[in-house]
View (cartoon, rainbow over the protein chains, first blue to last red):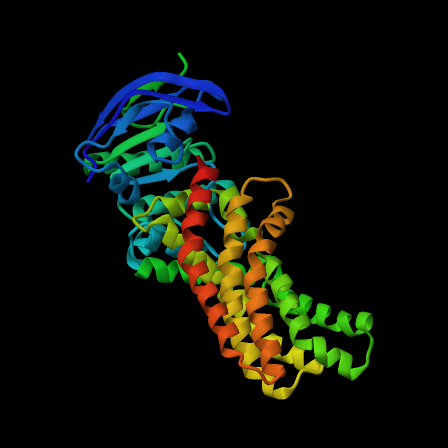
Amino acid sequence: MIERLELRGVGVRRGGRRLFSGLSMTLGAGEACALTGANGAGKTSLLRAVAGLVGLEAGEIAFGAAEASEARGAGLHLIGHQDGLKPARTTREELDFWSVWSGGTAASAEEAAKALDLVALLDLEVRRLSAGQRRRLALARLLAAPRLLWLLDEPLSPLDAGWRSRFGAMMQAHLAGGGLILAAVHDPLPIDAKVLEIGA
Amino acid sequence: MSRLGALLARETALAWGRGGGPLVSVGFYAGVATLLPLAIGPEAERLAAVAPGAAWVALALASLLSLDRLFERDYEDGALDHLTLSPVPLELTCAVKCAGQWLATGAPLALAAPVAAIALGAPLALTPLIFVCALVGGLAFAFTGGIGAALSLGARRGGLLTAVIVLPLFVPPVIFGGGALAAFAGGLPWAPGLALLCAYGAAAVALGPLAMAAACRNALS
């Protein structure tokens, strides 16, 4: 169980270039944080570093009392531009697989499909989905397998205004249930969130 | 357990569709087996002498075909990120991916191998041994091949690189399997060759995933 996320003096270097250093932040249960910064500032790299996919040059990332490997294996979701969805597979196949893989069930996948209004699209191949529908399918993982820490990389960008506010309500509900959200954004989040600017 | 079952189903389905899957591998295999008599000459005795070995080499080459996409596609579209964010160790994930590859291409090739060998004039009695060798050899090809596929992640023209990395690893199974088949055809004891092939397959299944997981972690970071 992740009850807090702590960054202490985190620095990341990518491709021989130092993206940022000395970044510190604490995120408690029920809190959200918006990561802002110019293109290339390192927002995505920070999210990937929290997920353990990118090594740190300096500092440390802690998940409260939880062991880092345990927290990364079962406690967090990373939703980014690369959604890992296979164009030739159907929406249902992808949703069911990722739900089970993340620790959910077929029943929770169905609930998530309803919540994100994907039911009519379940038999379509992923390649037939629009960008917004595809993003909703990626976001459905968040509901299909409950995990406390959501790492979101520009979750709103392909969504229309209606879905932005509906997803805002989903984030609000997640926070109310003790969840944590770290989201890289260019537009403000539709929820109350502290702001961490990278490369300021 | 349900996670691994779901992953195996996904991997097999993806490998089945990857670049045509089993049809392309088997078709390529049949093509090579058809080209051989045209190159060597149609005399039955000459063909029969090389048939088991030729069928075996063609099998190794056909196993290479869809290997380069084993990790590449998941790496490019981000699925590999999501696969690592799980309580399942990455080593086990890699092993299941290779098992899916084997089910989708190795097993169909094992069914095609005896047919091709007989078409080239190998004795009918050789059929069961060719099938078993192809099945076990296919497992070794899939798991050693996965190492090459993982190591060439992110490289341009990764497919060629995979082949260059993997072909030396294919040498032992080709020697052991070809040796067992030649020994059987010559009326000599063939069991040691098959036992060595099984041992190599077991070692590949046990050690390959460690190398693949390390290569994947390296490519992701």
